[in-house]
Length: 306
Image 1 (cartoon, one colour):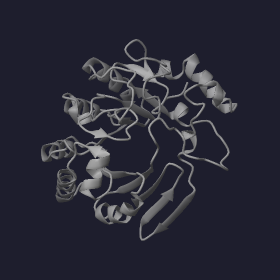
Image 2 (tube, rainbow, N blue to C red):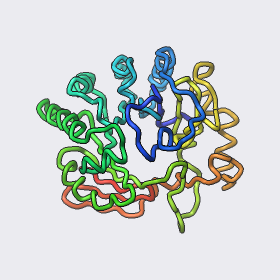
Image 3 (spheres, rainbow, N blue to C red):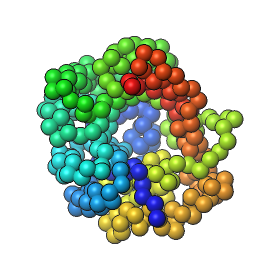
Image 4 (cartoon, helix red, strand yellow):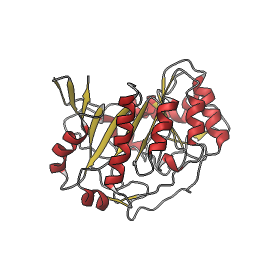
């Protein structure tokens, strides 16, 4: 019997912006599942169950959409913080993260928050992330940083994530200077064209994908995907409305897929046959200078304070 270490709870898959290269909402993407918001009975059942495990688990209350569009998000966060074993947070594009929301997350005491912001040039940002205003986003995030500092609080742990799109490499230095002095972590994610699950792991020995052993992904309607790369639930693994997370995570289908990965027969799984995300966490380079840890993996480069 194994338990997931990370549960992704897609409270909504609606989004208020349009990123050109989003694998779900991007330009030219064909959606093969409906849009919707999660019923409260689903998240209550999920949080209650994982809160009773007693084992540490990270809960991400975001998926293919912007979580701040979900009207019950505050209620969900407050309910979840009752359980001490849950490390709670979410990722946002920052447009709706008003000062009021900063006050809420600080009051609730969520553990972490990540902002997906691409570069420091407003014009480039609005090109890749349509319907956004970089100046507004930066003001929203700066308010959270200053308010957290005024409260002398360590929570939430703040991460800034930038996708390094074509011709955006030159933005990295300015991005680091802008954010690393203020936040806990800065990540530069590798750009992948829409539909691509390839990182380019030449020379790295294939290994079983850690997502199959650690991650549990729940869509807004309670259906369970194979992993975070299963954008359209091509491999539906179960339904949390009908069964417990533990039952689904240990069912025959999950175990069969794990066995195929262990035997290096991923070509027998359609979703995995052209995917090398399994190696995204392999550390290629790591060094520490001036209390900043730098790591490079096939999927990203990251800088975090020690």
